[in-house]
Length: 445
Image 1: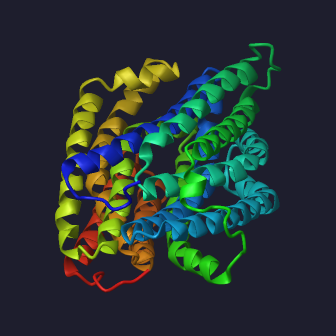
Image 2: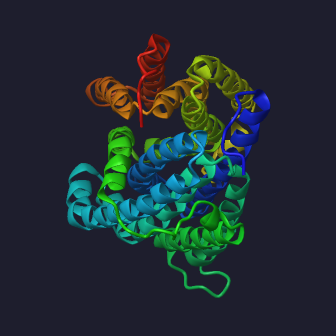
Image 3: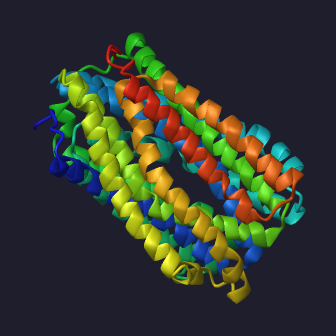
């Protein structure tokens, strides 16, 4: 198995495209949930926006752990140390389970009180809380599931990602349809049915991907079980590398939850429209995120090979591909925005109000396609504290903007979604200037 990477377009696309497909399936799951829930009514579609972003807070904490571990694994791959990769992965699994347990405890202890105090509509508040107290039990499955990302992407085996995600998608659609509407011989649970379906789907995806890892013999290549001794030094390394990213992603999505809570003050229609915008971001943003994950791995890998001089050229190549794909998506969204919005069965007035927001979001997708690549290049260098610093400054600016626009000035949500322009411009500027400064060159992980 070849662990050391090159930096050409073929290697970039060979890594990024399977990641895109693997990311596409969970987004299809989320959109499927919302389409089914939209059939129950506008309130259900609105509630799904808040529940989705809340769960996403914990999901991206897992992504922070995943990205930190991925950078470490890619660095060891570049250095040609397969047994060290196995040690990192084994310890990463235990860290993931511990964080998942903390997420469940936090949700049961604090979420009901906080959400009842912040959500103005009591019907939506209770619906959201009931859903989350079920949905949060999927967290251990999700965290173990994303650990496979860190391994397979870190060692350039992205072609195996698709099987777990495909199985998850099929299971999710079947149980969504069954539990929400009471079909296929399953009980009719309604809104909470989506929570049960998602948990079952995450468990199925986890089972399939670990079966593949074992069937392909990756557990032997990387010596997963040769030494099961827990080592404090390895835990420390993982946490030092990942904790700034965990904090970065957590505050990023927490700010998005804050944004949704302010949107809720504008009514159920505004919240439902914003939920569809999140779906657009999730579906069409997968390509940018896939190239971002590719950047993290490839930058870390070639630095591990001692080829620091190729880093900036690599980032520019990845940014160019990412922007080109997003430009096509931009054109489609602006020419036929109704094509996507019609899936939610909310009527012509809903679509008319949503189209201006789609146009704002389409520009934000262009900005994200470049900004997230440069930000993840910082992750690949191992300077995750810099990632956290960039995120923290950006979030302060972002939250100030959304409060002034949505709460203080009470402007339409179209202006509120302009916050994405503020976010990605700030993010890109700082990441770009940091990478161009060359201060990352002597970082060792």
